Amino acid sequence: MSSIEQVIAPRRRDLGGFEVARVLPYMNRRSVGSFVFFDHMGPAVFAPGKGIDVRPHPHIGLATVTYLFEGAFVHRDSLGSVQTISPGDMNWMSAGRGIVHSERTPPDLRAAGHTVHGIQSWVALPKAAETSAPIFTHHPAATLPVVEKKGARLRVIAGAAFGVTSPVVALSDTVYVDAALEAGADLLLSADHQERAVYAVEGTLTLDGTVLPPMEMAVLVEGKTVTVTAQTAARFMILGGAPLDAPRLMWWNFVASSDALMDKAQVSWAAGPSENWSGHFKLPPGESEFIPLPES
View 1 (cartoon, rainbow, N blue to C red):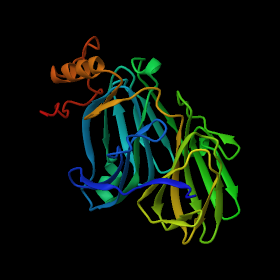
View 2: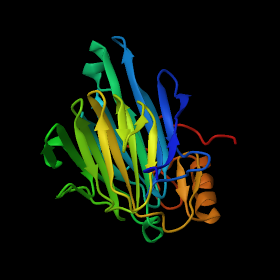
View 3: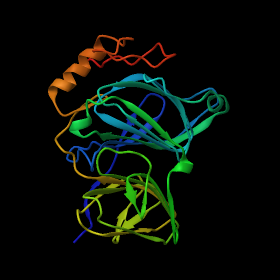
View 4: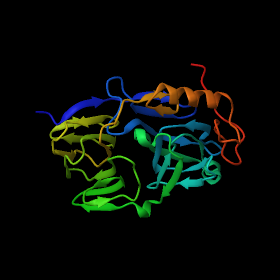
């Protein structure tokens, strides 16, 4: 019996100046654990003077998870957070009932020219927390546990895996690992989490002998221990956890368990960001522009 339930090939999306490979949501696979969105950014090379400017935009009902291999972003949000995220760091922004943030290339990298490469994902919040107060936490790379095995280096970004636990507080059972294998090395993936997937960032892997090429995601069979082998030096992400506690609606930057929550967010953002939090979103301090609500 195969260890792989499904293989997902990403769709290319142009985000205005750089391209992403979008893996989740997929037509017949909306989530893996609580992960409802998964974009592989780059590698994108920017000439001196060029960079990324994601203008302020809103979120509800999810945690944004930004993880970089190369480059850097400056994060600003409506809580007043200003934080540069560098490779190996973890930005975990829990939107709850509503938050607004921007991500921009730092001035020094913009001036020099740079490469951006990383993963942007969303984790749906449990129903009990989807209208909670928004929270932003930053975890430098040095605070995230790393496990060294023969031919393997494993950084546990969120949850518990390989005998260690990340300091990142996820509100449901979640696992997220940045894994690197030397050519020919093996890694045993236990069945500790109900839903699991492996995404090949770089290099070619086999999962119990089945080839997984770069930039594809393999959703693993529940309850089955799987051996990952690197055919070449490889880097991949391990993600998953407990299934969603209820179906989720996704539209634009919003995730919600009900039409009422989705409609409220749309009406609030369409009314325009405001300094008054009651019923409206507000812009991050120092920001004046924003992405308007799409027409459809």
